[in-house]
Image (cartoon, rainbow, N blue to C red; front, top):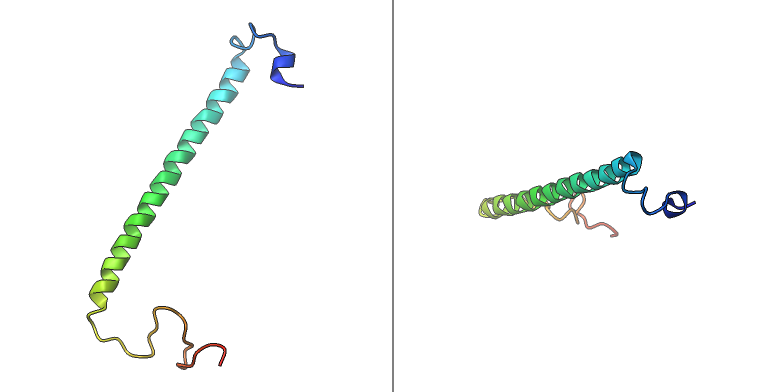
Length: 81
């Protein structure tokens, strides 16, 4: 049974329970949107900072066995060989 079937159109605006549920859902949706936006912004800032650090580290001589792509195994051979 839908809300419109249980209540007439004049009584829906006066129903405290329905107002509470609808405003609660709206508040949780806003909270979720703000949290997701903050998480995305923090991830973008982290990626930018990590990229700057990698560019600075790129000027330093790194041994051949260090791989930042993960394509080589510990022993220096390519996977699948």
